[in-house]
Image 1 (tube, one colour):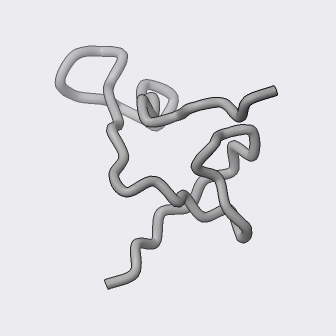
Image 2 (spheres, one colour; image 1 turned 180 degrees about the horizontal axis):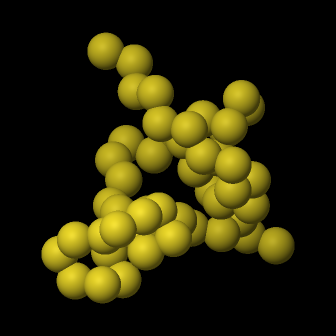
Length: 52
C-alpha cells in the first residue's frame, strides 16, 4: 500500500515531489503532553534538514 503523507517543508531530507513525505515512518509529538487541541501544538520529530 502506498503511503500518502503530505508535507510542505521542502528543506526536509524526506520531502519529495508533490509535497510527499518519503520517510518510512513518521513520529509526531504534542507540545502539551499527551493531547493536542490543534496542529500548532504538534511537531514532526522525523524532520531532518537537508545537508547544506
